[in-house]
Length: 259
Image (cartoon, rainbow, N blue to C red):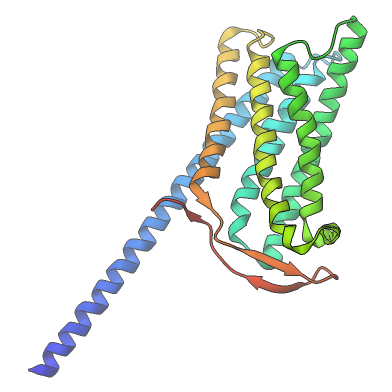
């Protein structure tokens, strides 16, 4: 009888653990499904604002390159780069290096596009004899543009594989990365704020298209803030030797801040 009771107890314990594991797996699947859905929704919003700005404003005049290139640079390229930065935190080793390289490439493309957009509006102002940075849109846009250069430079510095970060004392490497991450979010949100201010000028006609674009830009900002706040990094990183080969890997997983 005693043996039977023990067997029953072990069986019940096993069933309880199995049920907990299944519940945990189900919850994880639900969370990841929500994340995928939100990412797809954000990309749909990005596609909407890129399409509307390009369709309504690209007439190949000097000015038209400003809104189109800024939208492609910030709403499309930098949006993808920021999400990539949030989600590669749970990776390590060569996979992490590849994803950081992709993140850097997206940011460099964003920088190239917004530089073209900046030159276009600057030259157009000169051509028309107008003063620079007089409106809120111009001032916030300038802040976003300058901060983008600083953030990209910080990203190049903090990418261990390039080896440039070795000029910084090792005990400050973590701080450099944290400043880069926070600065990236600030630059991105400044850019989206500048886009909203630009849309308020009435440059994108008709009004329904303008409202859709405003909603899409707001959706991009809110979803990015959601990912930034909700998901955390519990310490994944890979130390590389001077040849760029993986030396020590600490594996962790991207987890939600709130369960």
